[in-house]
Image (tube, rainbow, N blue to C red):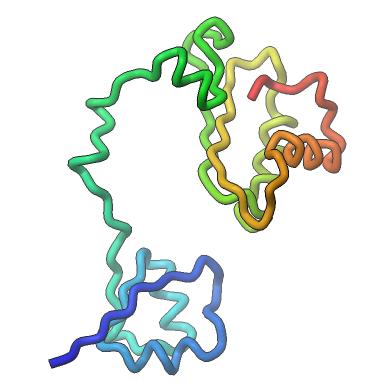
Length: 158
């Protein structure tokens, strides 16, 4: 007996035209959040087919209590500040996502750099990957800051 499961998500308030008919042919549709389930329901996907199943995490691999601090060499390789460059116990903000408009990096940078200055004990770490670009991220970030008229000389140290 064939049993068809669709695993999908969509990060907006609606799904593309044409998805509903195809999805309703599945036996089950797995979505990662209640938000996604509501979006699919509103679009017309049948309720009895929708199953909320969160993103899987390998708990044998990801054990945050068992990690070791990065060596200075690793910190340099990753472009992270070394211990001498940091004040003790800074508040750390972490952005993880593709370098694209919909991820809100411009909004984050505007909020961070208009809220904090070099005197604040904060650190912004941006973990990103290229998306339709090969341009250097530092150049792109500088361009975003210039477009927002944020003076670079008074910035909090990212």
